Image (cartoon, rainbow, N blue to C red; front, top):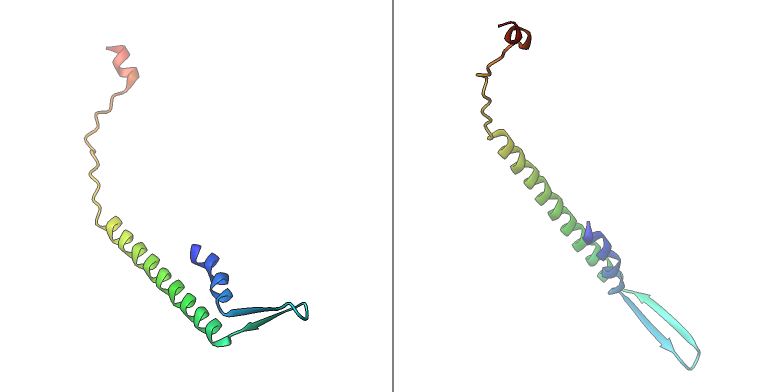
Length: 86
């Protein structure tokens, strides 16, 4: 999830800002190839993270299936009313 916060910063790297003091203007140019590469890399990273999460969930499921629980069914039951009458 944190990688999604970094995605906009990747696109900033594809921008070039130039300030012309003589004309008091600022120009912004975007390198579309760098932006596309950044988007592709971010998408690949997100896919890898999703695969890792899926693998961990699968491994956790396997661990749960391989867990054995012993339940003691030898429980002594007594009727409290019978104990008082004795």
